[in-house]
Image (cartoon, one colour):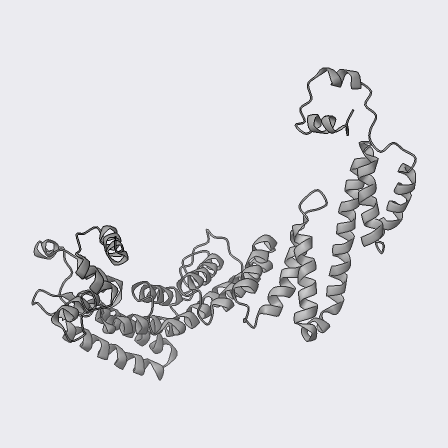
Length: 417
């Protein structure tokens, strides 16, 4: 069979239709069967269908925001029975927005008490404008300005709510960086307030308009986490991560702090917080070490961080060299302690050959620690002792079948008797 025919049949089979050889050949040669010109009615109709939806009058409308995009799939039946969204009042929205702008400008130069009232009134006007013309650039601007008005009115929870609504509806809003800046200020205020005056989560707030109803600190953490989720590559994503790590460190939650510092080091390598993430991460790693009976991973991480600090941040490290040197000595001490505990455990079981391995490692790698002298004395003590514990009832053990799968192979080679 001709290769062109084979190729045509294969493609026809793959697309699941009885495409003729001539049609498939035209697809392969890149003709306009599947790529119509931009000046054709079919192309324009497809483009409109993708980028817009048709209203009840047959006009194509460009959607704005997530709700606007969902309108394309909404049913006509829902609108007929009154469940659909009300038509936009564009004139009313524009008028409310202008009134909000006027109140916003008045508030800038007003006295403190009057200024707060004017900003709140402006926020209400902006919210009205957003409600009257949903899925539009007007709504996007109005939600942002409502957030700004509440922010300057010192109603921070209400401002944060407006910023969240804006980003939820318009994830790629032009105000994304500005809202991140505002939310960062709100979160930092919550955290600093709680640090100065800690309150239990069940204590309610009825008087301070700047704070949420309760649990100010947790709300600050929530705002920072929401920032990271909404805009993980934004200008202040690394700042939010650093603040979360610092907050965990301040509360002595070193496990969480260690994770957040590592997140910043890995995810934001160009962040100006890199030195602090390494330095404080070193402290957190040492604090999370739980002792010789637990994993050595925190010590290994801390040792790596010391090497990175001295190599990547030589100038900054000079100011903290005393702490770094002390931390390095502490790490070596604890690593030697782990080996000594293992050696002591093996010696107690009569496994002197295994114990000697740990003791020799102390003498070679940690000769500058206090455990070196103890390792030397222990090595001399077990030198004349059997390498393995004596099996007093070996005849009894031989009665039972051998569970090791490798022993028969070793016996066949003559390595085991």
